[in-house]
Length: 338
Image (cartoon, rainbow, N blue to C red; front, side):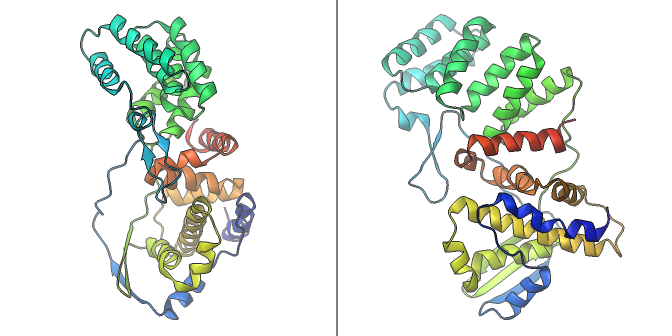
């Protein structure tokens, strides 16, 4: 792939964003920094950053629409009545010989009492799956998904039902969606890998997109710790986060658009630096090569959402509509699943 072809595709990526604007080059970002009222310090980092443990979404949670940091409301906070019974049922289901009849009775009584809470159907469906009773599990899980398409537990368990019935395509469809709805959940990911293997497909896990960069600000000083090309990533992110001249841009966007835009700028800026470095550096970085492929295919926003944003903040999935989730599924079958 020739460099001029790649750079010529950068601006085609923006048509999917609501907030379309010029993406500055690394030189323009450096000019911002040099003219800034803030002091920037750059530190070369050769070790490993201690990254935060990747979190998963507790099943049944909902996004707190009153929160500014994408916090979640646990299901037990949504439905406070019957907590002790549900907690007992959950623990009992993990025992060596679960008392299935008692567990089913608890969930059935709560469904009858609180029919609007679709997650209760997922819990009962999960119980049936543990019993290998897929005929009773499937209708309940289907109902739960119809009421709440963001129910990762229902998609996961429905995927397992189809897997056990050797309906691999249906199983994969539900497990891929469950994986997106709870991006960092290991159990869902393992079930997806198992089902893909049974269908003679694979999930490419040979690379990750993990910027080697940390940024912090103390009073009027911004410190960027990074390594190699990731300095560009750090500069873009620092300017977006702290530069006074970016205040208007940040205020003009909603939280989700701003999150995507900042990552988009940092990703493209880093890729520009990578392309320039390749003239003298023969090292390869698979994630950068996949960024180039995504630019060609005009799916860079999906790359950013799946590879970075949903890893860091999986609860943001609740802010994506079903059309966007469908594009993420297409991304996975284009880039990760073969």
